[in-house]
Image (cartoon, rainbow, N blue to C red; front, side, top):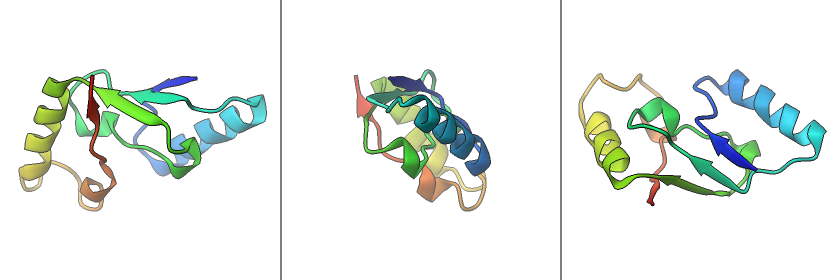
Length: 85
């Protein structure tokens, strides 16, 4: 299953993980649709699936993360590196 922009808050992503688990589905890959940090967040229960985004998306998010105060406190360390596709 391809997971696209899974959510922002932990409880949202946990609920999605519950739904996936109860349906017997697993995440094969994740994809970020556009360059906003909140589209890169991930929940451990989604697994270690490959995650993708464009090179432009990755560059934009890196710039956002470098800007003090742009990303909420405690969130920046949850935003992973993404693979350019």
